[in-house]
Image 1 (cartoon, helix red, strand yellow):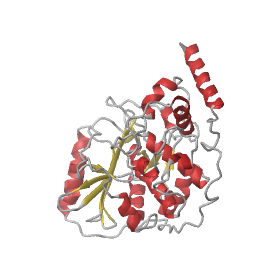
Image 2 (cartoon, helix red, strand yellow):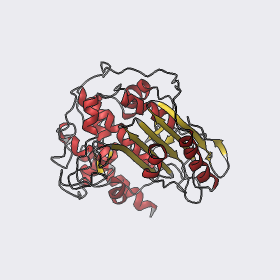
Image 3 (cartoon, rainbow, N blue to C red):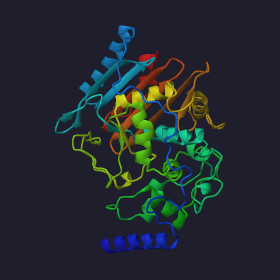
Image 4 (spheres, rainbow, N blue to C red):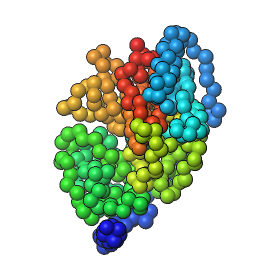
Length: 390
């Protein structure tokens, strides 16, 4: 069996080579559309974020605290939380440990967690920053940046809105990536698509179908158009300008996770090892804290990253066949209430981590919850929102 795995791995790499799709740095050999994006008009938030006093009904604070204390008491919550209103932190706290069984590394509100699919809105923000600069357009097809990409007529907008019809790499790689001791990367995902052409689910722009492949491809497009790695782009143009000093992109075999970081835990509170899928980024891969996600939230409100017009485009429900209360925009989930108010949010799950990032622009309220345990990790977006927006 080991011999077969090694042989299959060799055949895959050989096929990638003869198909000219082994991507040493960029998926295709093209010149970046811009050499360096140092002309982008971003203004950094103050390095030391200072909280301002805000009058909040004490019953709201007590309600939030009671909810999480009770869940933690009954072993149903291990993580960090932050609630904010009008740019001010209403409540923040951390419960439990980075290593739950050993009760090591107490969590704080500055502890970075793997935020799983909450990475997607941040990837979307990077793409829309390039869009604002005219580096790319939402109607551009993937072939403009990756000429040999095998699925035609898929636009950047299709990727952002989950309407590409692409196959899910987390599934098709079971057939084409047998060596699970070898870390998979975004280039490998592109290579498997080009070499094997797994059946897609739908034709482009037909219907909503949530697949992680969309945002893995978007991460590759960020690298090609900017001339920077996904990690460097995020650090230079999102993390640093926003003052997110506890945030980074993790790529297995390239970045080392400190043992003091919170590990993902399963239902029995056992640590989940770093996955071979963790070399793929864009759909996941960002580690950040509740305080840093709040700074990202404020960068959006303050238009330090994207102008308001672009943000409204991102927050527009893009699927006519879906309910207004459960829709998808450009990398964001959309819940439009009957009165027209929109809840803009995204949640995530990956290998023992769960994340909730809920924004209510109509009241400038934000809810951020990050956990590192599957046990008790399923929280209701509605309940979390109502803790501060009842």
